[in-house]
Length: 174
Image (cartoon, rainbow, N blue to C red):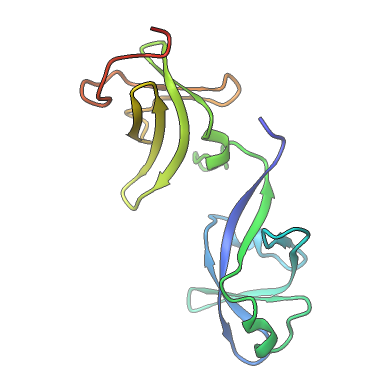
């Protein structure tokens, strides 16, 4: 597993006021840490980054000013830019996992290898693991009752053997 991974922490929205502040559509549970003054965020382009000068909350909206974008016109050019931060993959301290930590993990059902996690889909009700196996792709709700074991060190997750969860009982092991 990689020592660090890049994750999207926000998307720049519309300018606010005349001094270059921008609204941020958040994709992180740690906005005060990710957008603290002095933080450097990647724009996802080769060598592209933005340095946070100020950040503040106004009416539940995060407003951020970046170095070099001190007026509304210049700040407007950043609208729609995704902001990325480098983090250590794994559990984030609140029991959640970064997608990059889960992607690629082996999926075991009843101790036998069933497939691998291809991606994670974020839905309002719960996240879904996209499991790629010999029988195709399957969606598994990422809840403790169905996925009781997540072993990042061991490189696998254990999924409960629930009838109907997977279309076929086939496993990669045979």
